[in-house]
Image 1 (cartoon, rainbow, N blue to C red):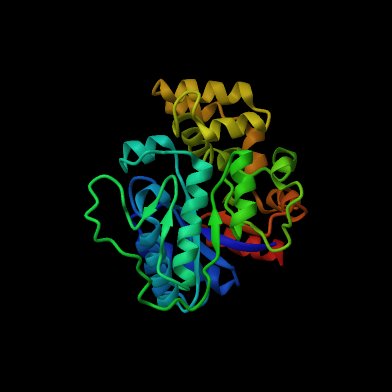
Image 2: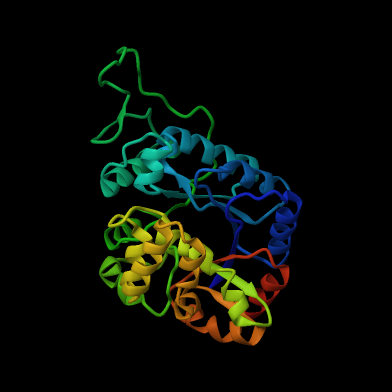
Length: 334
C-alpha cells in the first residue's frame, strides 16, 4: 500500500498547504489530490502545488463532470500533464443532484450511462487517433440537436498528449463501483471501511483488480486524546451523511446504512436538515469514525491502520495537514 495526500478544498493558507505537499513528496508519497464542491475548483490549486513540487503525482478528487464538457476535461488534464512532466491523475465524479442541478444547471441524468459516455469521450480525445465524433444519449458531438447551426465538425486535439492519463472514478453505490472497475484505472471511495469489503463484493465479483488502484481518502488526526481527535472528523461526516443530499436521495447516508449505521444515519440527517449541525456531529458514533478514519496517539493509529494494510487498498490518500502525521504514516506503511 502506497500513500497519497488529499489537500481537500483550497484554504486561505496557500503557503502552508504547499509546505505540506512538499513534505509528502520528500517522504516518497505517490500523489497529492485536490477537491471541489461549490467553492474553490480542483485544478488551479493542483497546478499551484504542481509548480512547486517536482515528482509527486497530481490528482483531482474529484473534477465534477457536470461542471465541464468532456472535451474541456480532456484539454485541462492534458495541459496539466504536459506542464507537470506526466504527473496528472484524472479523478472524475458526477457529484450529486443538488450540486449538478442547483449549482451547475445541468441535468443529473442517468449516472451509469452518463459516466460511461463521458469517460469514453475523454479517452478518445486523449488517444488522438481520429477527430472526435460521439452521438450518445447524453452527449452529441458534433452537436446536431435543436439550435444547431450545422457548422460543427469533428475536431482533433491540437496538442499531443505524452501518455494515456489514468482515470479514476468516485463511486459509492454498488453499480457505480462496478462501472469504475470496468472502465477506469482506479476508484476513489469516500468513507471507506476496510473491514466491510463485503459491501462491495457484488461490484467486484468476476473482475480483474490486479492493475486497479483502490485509493480511498482517509482522515488522519494525530493527538494525545482519541476523543478530541475524533471531534475533528465528526463535523465532516455529519455534513455528508446529513446534508449532502435530500431525504431519500443522499448517497453518503445510504453508505452509512450499508455499513450498519441505519439508526445513526437517520438521526444525523434529521438533525442536520433541521439546522442542528453541532448536534448532528455529536450523533456520529465513535465506532463509525474509527472504522473510516485514523484518530488518536501514535500507538492507536498504528493499531487502527492494520486493517487498511491487510485490505485491497493500494493507495491510502490521507487527509491531514499535520506533517508529523505524514511522518508517522510513512513509517507505518514502509
